[in-house]
Length: 139
Ligand SMILES: [Zn+2]
Image (cartoon, rainbow, N blue to C red; front, side):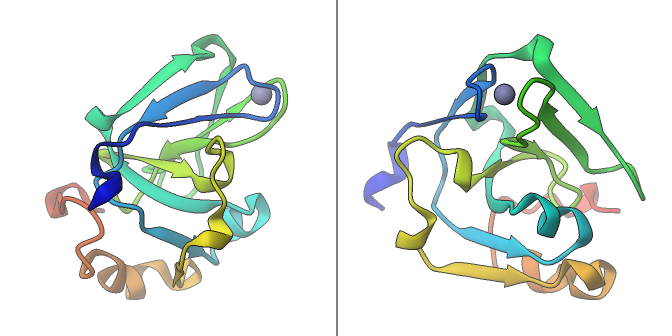
């Protein structure tokens, strides 16, 4: 696709955290689990090697719960969660599309994932060929 080699940039609200990445494709996902709902997180999953943190390492705060596989990251200054390591794809970085510079999630179709029933529904997410499938990494 056209945007395949495009580089996107993003940041948290205060700008302390900044990053860039080159997505394989733009596929947006909205999850209804407890934390994604509260965050208002719109997921764009990117291979780890395609993601680069440009600034803010010292401002990154980590939060984990439940299985502890998902490594939630947020800016300790402004509290925004621009990206994290998702439980569904531990070898990837899950970017919050709402934190991408000049990007409007309204311009794209957004798939939904029933994260409230994660164990029962994860197949529906991974079966779509969303990203490279490191099935062995799943819990
Ligand atoms: Zn911030």
